[in-house]
Amino acid sequence: MTTAEADSATADDLSRTLGLVQRLEMNPEGRARIEYEAGLHMCHSGGVVQGGFVSGWIDAAMAHAVIAMAGNTVVPMSLELKVSFFAPARPGRVIAEAWVERRGKSTCFMEGRLLDPAGQVLAKASSTIRLASRERVEASARAAG
View 1: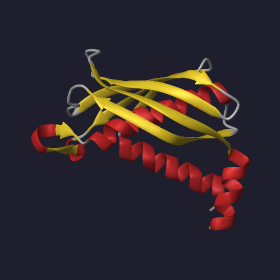
View 2: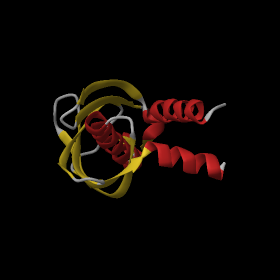
View 3: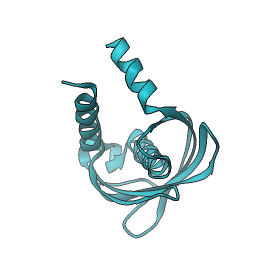
């Protein structure tokens, strides 16, 4: 299996794990909206989705927003992620949306949020993302593996 095939398989596994339903928007202005299905297997007590999934959904939307703006030649690498939880996410559909707040040469400052189907904000996040060269990241992976 080539590195590209392995990366694709890993991305598919990750999308499946996160419950990806569909990518609703990939805007070159630096915006993304992704729909996920929260399953009972993602919940802890009382049918509340575990916070790591909530964080992962918003983080993935942020990565998609960066890729929509910068293209597939970059790999978004999270340097920092802060999530504030406002209401519990429950099993069912949720929408993660994110946008580039400001882009520098090698760093993006991101904002994002998670919404329920009625549009209620369940969580908000901000992140600092390093724009890594895909070529360098893949070369490093080949050297390590």
